[in-house]
Image (cartoon, rainbow, N blue to C red; front, side, top):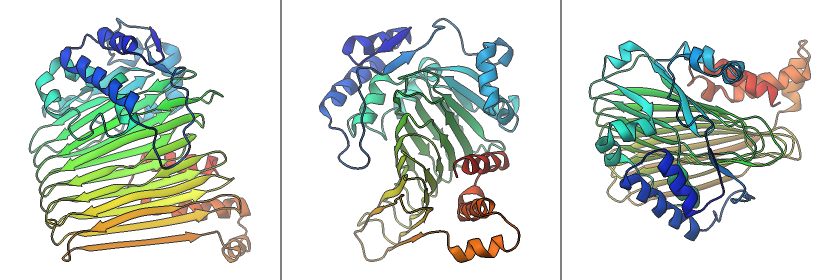
Length: 437
């Protein structure tokens, strides 16, 4: 089954094939109305998409269930996923889900994590098996009328992960989801919903790739995360979409008292990225961190950053942004920090560092920083630099080639980000960076 173009009829087709109840069907239709009425973003890179040509749903095996054994997945798909390291990565995880085009095709979790009563499944399975839990949280942090692409996701969402971690539960291994676009003009619209209950701890990892076509593809995901009291969630992403993909994502976390949310966000691929992970620090003494890197090469625009909203007292946030531009690319920081008048004694820090590798590339820092009380601290610093001739000469004089010296300087520049990743992901990041220099 393949659904091309946006219409009420096509949205109802998606809802019907997923056997949804009226709650989700009506949510889709309401989202579609919002999509039609909302304008394109008035800021950031130019988005040149023909919505009538995009494939909004594709599944060649409608009746096929989600597999938990790779031997039951089509061999060409297994080989394709193995070639980009998915099967190797699974060995280090507590559980893994894999989405191919519009549906999750594989899902597995270690028994020791199942025994802790953790729920890790596709969003569709959760909607069917845990409807009350999903409806309690679904669409509450990210509204379906706040921007055009969140509304689009609400209308055509398919696939994605649902995670529920019960109170007083710590996971020793991360959970991972992997997303693959493999067709021309394909749109992928996964919906991820994560609830980390009180006094619990989760590390979730997301990876994504797509082959390169001349036609534009679209990735417009929505991620909603609830962090309970004294709980912690870390969400790590390395985005390596092909350079024909528009990556337009809305990610947001609601953090309760003494809770901690950490976004570790890497942007290497895509034609255009617009992504600003957000923390709503609602509870007193809650914390939010976002550490991002963006690497933009020829014909790439990485418009990324973070948003922190301090609503509770004694809240703290930290944004660290590392941007690299080369070959005419544009890697920019765009962010917002807001400290409410009642968020007394809060602390916020923003640090933006940019490395421009030639004379035809660019980078901008576009911050909005607002503090509405006098007892809080808000710091912002930004640096822009190039690789100095002196540094290159010093390394070349010791027998290091200019290419290798540049690579070492760039990896050192990104060290603050790399050290936050699991070892196997840090190694993968090193390889991605080397291929993009």
